[in-house]
Image (tube, rainbow, N blue to C red):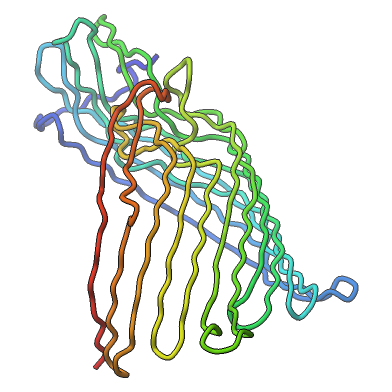
Length: 350
């Protein structure tokens, strides 16, 4: 439960309710050492570094009082982190390499959510309050990335990468109560959580079929797939919380292309499994998005050295966007049909 007793009230002119101001001062120092050498017969390059980052925030605004007026307020907050990192590349052969990355990373909170002040609504049976959280701390994670890359030809490659992220803290929406002047209000807002783990892998394959006889030697294919497993959750709804915003368990794409004699064409198939959509940090805009599949295509022709004509088609299957409240497919929220988009264009270089 939050209490407005933590706020510092200021004297001065009272602004309108929606207005607020945020001053953020960032101070950082960084040192890095480059490395190269051999381990056995395997050459390597890399770097090791340490970054110190300090953030000081002053959030000023106002909050609505029970009497209908507003009082100016200001809240100061600061946080700092030491962020070490190690990046290494091991050249196994002339065509293949292993990448290793170790790092402690930080992502600052959204500025919008660090606004100060509360607005109160007594028009409903359940009194409600809304506002920001000026004391938010950043996302902080310790992470490991390990990948293998193999290249052949000018436009052909195959890679696989494994990743593991241990989030020490994250930011999400929480439902609770806030007290003001002895009254209790239902409140939904952003708070810091205890984090969790995000892990998975990504594979990529790209092949130019230039070994085929003409005219098929302009064909090529690009495909990638990623799998993500996470136990990091939003804080609402309490009995069935959303997954961390934006994370899909499965994401994949497949693109076929053709490039030859000034002509290029490609068709792409894209898929992502269900995910939590955080379209806005406003609580009403957080919902469960169903899986999405789209097909796009494009054609281009280099008419002259200076002029190129293009034709693009987006969402050719007219895929709609479907999402749901409370992380529950039995509670439809929106069904939006974006439609197909056809774009005709040209590029002219002087």
